[in-house]
Length: 263
Image (tube, rainbow, N blue to C red; front, side, top):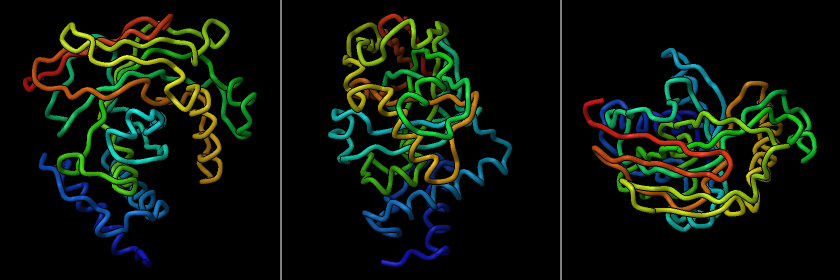
């Protein structure tokens, strides 16, 4: 199947319209195919350019589908990545407006903040580029109705991104081991998800290495100051009006958010 520029634009239009109107759309795999990852990233690139043209600023990347549990939930079998924008960012304790989201689900993860560009993607160079890490809750979302997504749908849809919430306790990699952290996420005070750092490709740093290599291949390397959401440490949890999510991630402490239709 040959995917033309017109088809790429049509797929981007479908996802863009869903986001603007607040109404989920059918999958885009019927346009770009179920296996053409390059076409899916081309759609993502079109949507990224449109968002920048509307005034958004890129602040990092997110890695998705790094947990086997999350892969099972959405029916895919490999990681992907998307772009983080400044208007997606919240700090712990924030009230997140549900008007920004369509079908939100929360997942807990480690966010790395880079202190240097990554131009060589070996494990040692990637580790050395990390300035610090914080606890994070990513609110994933899908413009595709009922989360009926395959790998090309989620890649095209900016890796099913929504918003993200960052904790305020920063640690260097000399102060903790990402693979060893234990995560517990509470939904309205009840434990709804748990896991460890090893749920994320065996080690969240493995996910960061994967992203760094992919970004270099695409000639868009990770840069100093980038925030990288490294991937879920356990299953996703749906959220709705009035819900409160609090994630405890080992020595990184807690990060929380409340969700409101009135926000």
